[in-house]
Image 1 (cartoon, each protein chain N blue to C red):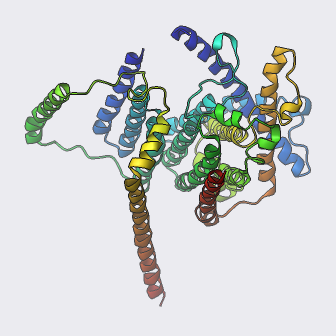
Image 2: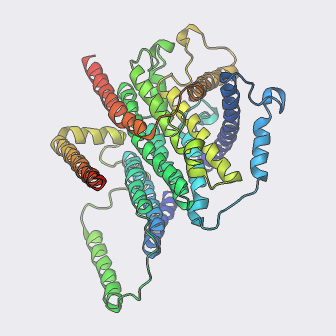
Image 3: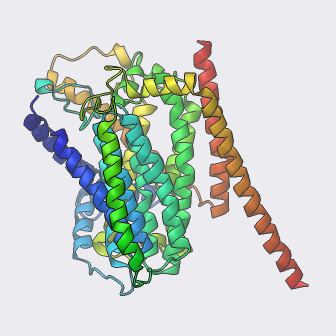
Amino acid sequence: MTILAFFLWSLAKVAVVTVVMLMGIAYTVLLERKLVGRIQNRWGPSRVGPFGLLQPLVDGAKSFLKEDLIPTAVYRPIYLLAPIISLGCALIAIAVVPFGANMGPHGVDLFQISNINIGLLVILGITSMGVYGIALAGWSSNNKYSLLGSLRSSAQLISYELALGLSLVGVVLRAGSLNLRVIVEQQATLGAATWNILGGGQIVAFFIYLMAAFAETNRSPFDLPEAESELTGGYHTEYSSMKFAMFFMAEYGNMINVGCVATLLFLGGWTSPLGDLMPPLQNTFINALLPIFWFVVKVFAFLCLYVWVRGTLPRFRYDQLMNFGWRFLLPLAILNIVGTSLWLAYR
Amino acid sequence: MHLILFFLFAGFCLAGAVNLLLQTHPINSALSLIVVMTSLAVLYLLLGAEFLAIAQIIVYSGAVMVLFTFVVMLLNAGREERTLGSRAAARVGFPAVVALCAILASIFLRAQGLGSAHLGEGLSNAPGQSNLVLLSQVLFHELLLPFEVTSVLILIAILGAVAIAHAEGSKIAGSERVAEK
């Protein structure tokens, strides 16, 4: 394939995935508001459009039209750069996530923007770069509460990054590769029975990943850095309208990224849970779209789990949070690696 | 194509490094250093060392520089003051740097065996094999002892840090108890 053809196909894929991702972020906000509302025995947004489905569009318009306040004594270049770093890292990580099987016209891989051999490490790397958005936002705001919130949040993020990375090592040991497509295909042999969470024996790793991911995305029950009653809003106190919306979008974008990685590594990615019981359909168009359907269903289930946990559990106190990350999750993740290695060596 | 990418990212790297020296506020210098680290990672990727590239981003840009940024933020380091500078340093310094670069360049250009790496290709001594597999084979077969010793070294550093923090904490608690009495 010529460089120009590769460039144009990549551009098209990036455009489609970015639009879908941004719409997904907007509707994840609506999903959260409706689900948390139902958990709290109320409706959630239901007036704007049928079932409140036009609410995200109206929220977007509101964010654009609000007054954009920049306090006088902020350190301007970094104040303006921080939300860009946050949202950029959240959107870039989706570039290595495969949504469907490796098919497409003229040898183009239609369902993944870039097939990198070390795809899993790229996602971890971009997540570590996302810490800068929060750290710089709090510092540049020239506000004590913002600085405290951002420092707490950065310490929380770098502590739980360790448990996150180590919990994924068990999956990599089983798959023998860091390439996300290879990891998914290795789970697909028997449908749900060989997914890494069940037959693969990585259920402990899945729970460690789940808890570390809640902490990485600053979500309940680990959302002390941005809790309104604690630190008047934490690192995004001094931000208004579109910049605040960018932090918000970055948080939900990270939720979607984490959900995608969890489905790829633990839930079998785009493969159907029925495995070989369902014969491949005649229609190639539906055959191409069915994996995407399974992928979206699994990510949706993961997001519902996220929102369910947010609506149910109370917040951790900061020292309990750090204690949990360093003295429980990290040793448990290391034990998981040792256990998986022993099991694989025994076989 | 690879040459264009090389020039672009080498340019970013050099611009970041020069900006690091010219900025007065330490946070700007820290951010320029992040740009340098990330550009270096792209240069490693161009040479075919993909694992090293991503390890550079995860370890250097994502952990070491976060630590630097924390230090700048916590110590509230302000802008540097502009001094007049040292005239001796200007007169001897710039020619010395030029001479040093000339010596290094002549050594590198005359060395035997260099120039076997090409942009855009994989590793030249093991074509087709994955970077990661080769690296792990070397790390766990030939370099196993240095690997284990390095992990013990890092453990000692962590223990030292915990011991220092613990001693300071109990000293502060002790002085508070004395003050209460």
